[in-house]
Length: 213
Ligand SMILES: Nc1ncnc2c1ncn2[C@@H]1O[C@H](COP(=O)(O)OP(=O)(O)OP(=O)(O)O)[C@@H](O)[C@H]1O
Ligand SMILES: [Mg+2]
Image (tube, rainbow, N blue to C red; front, side, top):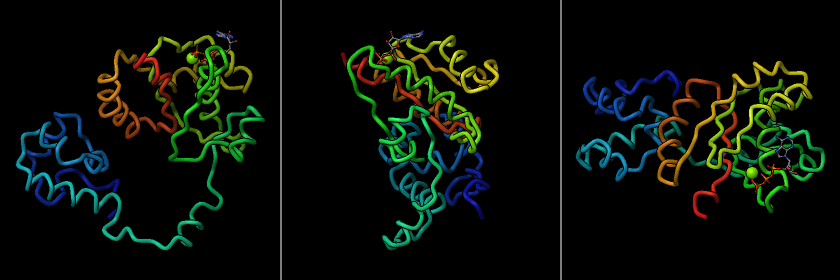
């Protein structure tokens, strides 16, 4: 059984009622559920600790496998031939050994006006390109904490990469974030939902620091 074909109801200890409760709290899939820690889920659902632990354990086993021990040699092999996302800024791609790795978190730091937001916009376009052009054919969630997102910059960049500007804009989900607590909420709920339902391959937070300054 593949992890994507498992419904919440199929999990041991979850009946239709509990599945409904979880869905009402924004937890739509076993994959999402598996990422919760017990304290968070207890707070969210008022279920007993024993029950929560049992449910989370079986969710993790399904999503990540019940045997998660692997030899480092096998792990090393799994990194061979991974598809990287190019920024198409040659110096940065060289620095990143060809582009951004999948499933990785990158932090771009620099003084104001150095191009962090520009790079985020460029990646929001290049991620949509096909693999032959250095992209991964995905859409984007852009968490915007400083009202920095600019559709006109996207249009310019899309034209530069021969992508239909309207299509490029259509594949970017912009979420306005108002403070640090809101960022957490948006990631836990809106972002998870979009990742599951909208072929999202890139999540941008521009910027985190603005929330703490
Ligand atoms: N709409 C725009 N079109 C073209 N260039 C722009 C536009 N907005 C900003 N720029 C320029 O692009 C460069 C990089 O700006 P960018 O906003 O990416 O910097 P940043 O590193 O995100 O800065 P900050 O720390 O203030 O957010 C700057 O020289 C800026 O003047
Ligand atoms: Mg910026």
